[in-house]
Length: 228
Image (cartoon, rainbow, N blue to C red; front, top):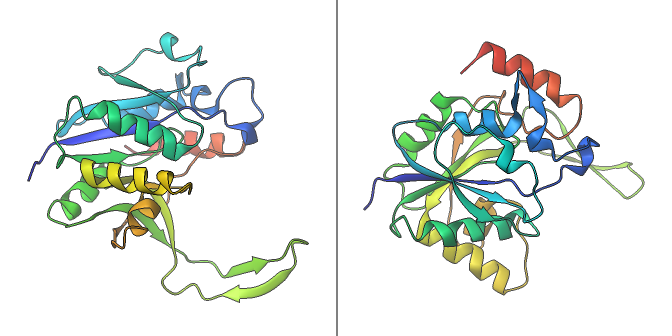
């Protein structure tokens, strides 16, 4: 089995919930864009290469100062389409059994030690897995009127984070299968789960936030200042 590790970062979204003048991955934090910070987290000796999935109409990408050579792929309508495009491009460089780490462009605060932990814990796993956090708060389910209809037992519930790491061929086939069935998935693990497989949950740090709302920027800046 191959021990090469590659990264795919889908970065074709517009980040509409941020309400900014540009896609959120290009918003600045500490003198760099969010996407540049994210890419730097994977500037590790073990990483063989990085694929970034960019929208055709993206006018910001070519203005970036990149920390390492990047392979570019076309972005898709949804995250799962972008990742599948990235996997298709990566097949020109990687072997079917190479590992692929898929990471959100808007998660610039992931710790390098968590990336290394994920790689180490999954090195001999038959399926793959993802960084995640056990749910700590009481969970409520609401109706359409935002009224509580049920308190959900939090035992065994996790917040899914990224990176999510799977063998290239396994992930490609899983995503292609769900899309061929006219289904959409919100992360790679869900596509793998639909094939009857059980990805491993690897506990990460809570500072691995996904920047979604404007108030997340100040929190991300704090995390970037205090950790690597």
